[in-house]
Length: 610
Figure 1: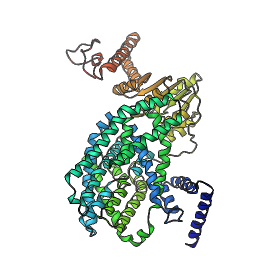
Figure 2: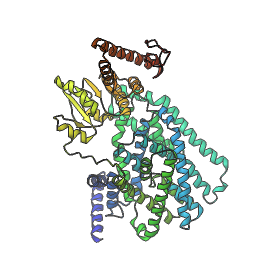
Figure 3: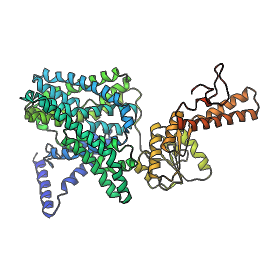
Figure 4: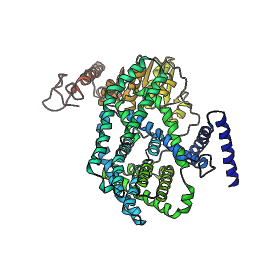
């Protein structure tokens, strides 16, 4: 203990000396060093980055070696990482897509929050707390950590997968729930029942007015603003404007009693259809990652080991009770909405912890007299412990869940950087491998990027150099040489990725042709509307060849086979052009039918829809 005190004193001496000569950067150095040391170490042993940040914060915080004594200030600043994370998620959520998720947001999300509130209410009651305190403590734990879950989803590459989108929908509902939950605190507070209905309506109207004002500003002001700044050709001004939009929207929502994260998310949604959205995402991304890591460091610092030691039994019972009941509630709701058993289990494990918004709820309840300072400290410790346990639970889930995928190894894998190929090929699965061969056969220099490390390692054994990189990210496209490439081929097995990369290339490299692998007719139309110069359905030509071979084996001569295949290809092209204008079923008449009484010529209307 004496040694720790000496270290803390020495650190304080360094800080005082630095402050005497100018800006004190020693705390910044300590924070960065803690992250740089802990995170790679924890990831190497398979414990993940989140647990690394939390452990590093605990070590350097007031209950570790004591280099910091005010973790709350750090958490408040670092919450901007969560805010920027929600802004980036919003950029990927066009209003039409968000509208299509309304059932998941207000269906799954509302059901999960309501059921878990009722279940977790019983924990406090069983421990002898008042009805009001039990309700607030349980409700706080219902609010999942957006920071942890989003980080875990990103590390597991599930953000754009259907299970990941459903989790994001629930998190959005929980963000919306902050306002009524804070109103509930005011109502449950001593004398709160005297609050008039008019006062409550005013607070609701203020929140709605803030949302409406943000939507109007985003619709009519933001895109013209960024167009004006783009003409100035000053990259740093665009970055400053992006940060201004994020922080301004977050602050406006906070003033209206809503969460900052919700404001940032709405700003992202409003800019999701802007031509500048990919540039904004690239500008904000570095700040998001750094501040999110700082947030986890602050949470680790805030873990009060003294409180835990004095109330070990109570905290252990509460953590287990809250997490088990929440696990059950999430699983039941997931199954109720027809999620598969594996998806329901994974969702429950990911979302079983309490979240950062609980800190706000508990602090408000303490100020209102519902919770005492000791209860607030206990609940805060319970939330932080549950957050720290989440990465461990995910590790156990991945280890023992059926059909667990092997962990990826980066051995021998190089990250795309400074590539200069004439052609940039994104994706090197079954499609990309074949597409590369005619180009390589003619000596064309092809830069290839892929996210599957096993595929990258396997390609090297065949004499093919493939680099690691996600083509859906603007910074990776630049590093892979997209700006210098004569053309770009998207060959990855990812429907949404094909559309995103096409939009990204059209916005950032408008003179570069982009050739895209599509999956079916509907996806081909979507890719074409996104701006692809050429697209091909992955099974189209192989299916035509199979049909032609069938004709040969039935005895048709070679000229007839060739004419039939060529006619089918022509009709398909005409059908596609018709559907680009009129929709998926507009070209149904180009399909050859086999129903009695239907014609077989190419006159639209003579064939069944396909």
